[in-house]
Image (cartoon, rainbow, N blue to C red; front, side, top):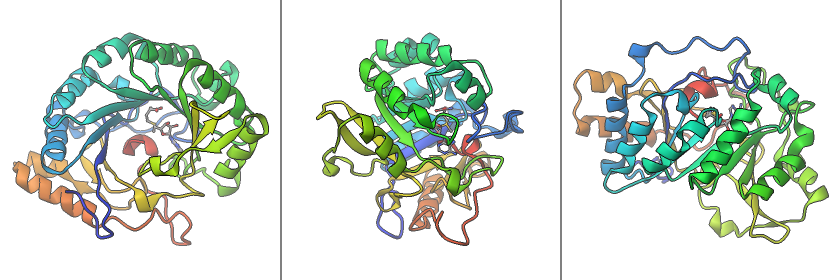
Length: 329
Ligand code: SAM
């Protein structure tokens, strides 16, 4: 098991397949992009599958989420998913993506056994999309969503980050869009994880604000909190249900006490928290010839020292040096 000193057990592994992305969402990275990892530094597909196998077979990982950067940019993605879903015991396997390219890949991913997707969609307006993501790709994202649904990658979940003065007027339209199509929408509070270090608490649209905006138009009732478990989203039934909407208040309503996540970066570092200052280098160990037992022990040690909370409210909080795109969201 991957247990920390507070008794939390990590069962949900987020694996970043690449730090590259074809969008430049301003809450994540600057318009000019970033200095990407060099190919020799990236884990190969075989190395990724080896580490995921150790996680699943020896360390109690039951859910694997492939992410990035943009995971659809990783050429071996379908193969990596197929090899993950073939593990015994078989983990739940999902993907977080911006949806660009999903119209081409959704059927193959479903064929490889992928269970479902989270697609990021912050706006329904083409001009706002261009302003926020610095690319004119809204129609590709919407097509990707449709393809995921048609391929049965359900429930299709949609992630939205609202930014003040940019897309914060779109909470209700985004919800209606998702309800009409049977997608489950989740609003995520903007976190201090952008490469430019431009996050300001006063600019963040809080969970309270999001809920107040939604409730002005739509009847929301608490979904059974017992269902939440370790899920980051607080869920609400829309107009009595069964449709639901989620709010992930990572900053103002932290859920660290129930966190069951651990992260593997595209260059093979274990991070026990999105906001961790330290990492554990499994790539170096693996390339130096470490056996599965040794790698598993290093991984356990990395999780054991997980802090009680992300500490954003602590006066000594320092934003991690890796931005979200290089950690894997
Ligand atoms: N490229 C994929 C995507 O767009 O979903 C996967 C990686 S992206 C880093 C994963 C999720 O993190 C997206 O839903 C994105 O909106 C979210 N995200 C990125 N930066 C964020 C930030 N500073 N605060 C909150 N969410 C963020």
